[in-house]
Image 1 (cartoon, rainbow, N blue to C red):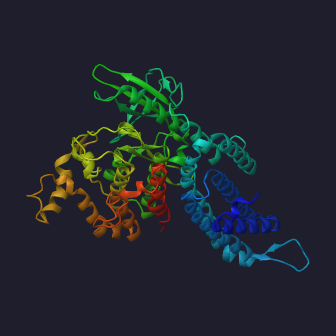
Image 2 (cartoon, rainbow, N blue to C red; image 1 turned 135 degrees about the vertical axis):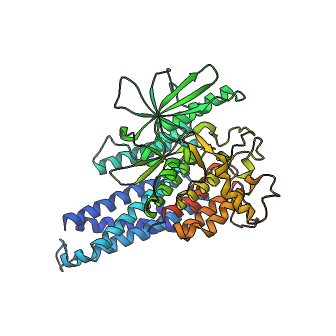
Image 3 (cartoon, rainbow, N blue to C red; image 1 turned 30 degrees about the vertical axis):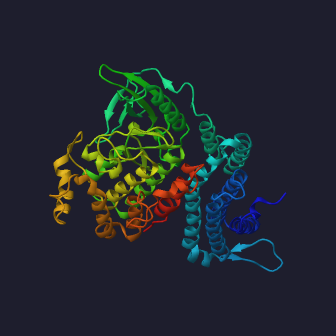
Length: 523
């Protein structure tokens, strides 16, 4: 049987680089304790990635268009692996005829930062590869038995390498994800009995913090989905069950989505809702809504803003990997959490009130509220939107949020945490329209919001966040334009790329055009 890595040249190059490292590693690992730690880190990345590519090669057909994406990723890994190996090899001292090697101490001190950076780059690449790997694995849904076996074997190998047999890894998460996506009805037992919670508002957020009165140290986030009178209750119940089943398997730090304990059906006198009971990571209760941060906190460093942008983009990517569109991405539905261990600003998406499955029905109705229309493409504004909702509309909303994060300026003003100030929110747009003699003739000023945002991204954002960040924001804001449009950068026709699996095609395109470019930004 041919080695699966010989199928594609990029993967073959990667395989050779990994083989060279593993051979050198045997002599390096005993040379110095600190150097050994670097080698172990490289080994973990290499073995995990090798297993990931082996699994993907078993689910993709030989002519799959996704092979090029995997091949390109393997080329990058090969280069970064070679950089790390070269950096370490530069400080190794060898004696003729002696198998044991030693470290050139003086040179190691000089090159330590180079080695550290090479290893960090390698680990960062691994983190960037995960979203596309999870997504492309979705083509394996009809090959569940054989793929599950391979994922089980890979999960066991990684646990043995890490020395932690209980901790879940990427292969366990992938196995769970394939399991739930192969059952369109979702989990049984996802609905919980109606329980009393002590609730505490998260200022400006659509979600609340809550805890059971008897268990004061365990906090949850409760996110409510209101049952619209015109909604199909059976269809909504099925969608809620399926989303909750997927969120039940979500690892918050990997996916940027809070793990779901279950859902309560709440019936009131005037309305009813489905309340998602979401676990807080490590039981913390220090969430801040992004809107709150934009309105009340001083401008963070560019490093911190980029961290928020990266985490938010990752959250949206995984929401789409779960086969759902969010439909409500705005700062009120984004929670920030400072991780004391990594010092990262983690983000978590909530506000699932308008969600639906990617191929599910969507209501051609909405509202005309300005503080929501700010984040909607004109084709989805107003009470009767012109277009069916798609992933592209989520990406447009992301672009508006990234614009706010880069400028660290709220595009919506508030009188109180529960009451938007619509008049003040309109002032910047009205001023922009007035300067172009458009205000008097604008029948619906909100339709000019994309032009206003694009102007901000081109003229104001670069000095706050850099040209590359601004280009990414523009890519999001124009994602629903046709390639033949004036901007020339649209991807609205992406769904023609793979008519059998449009979700995966769109997801891979998003990872290539947005997620990977955001991840590559650094100070």
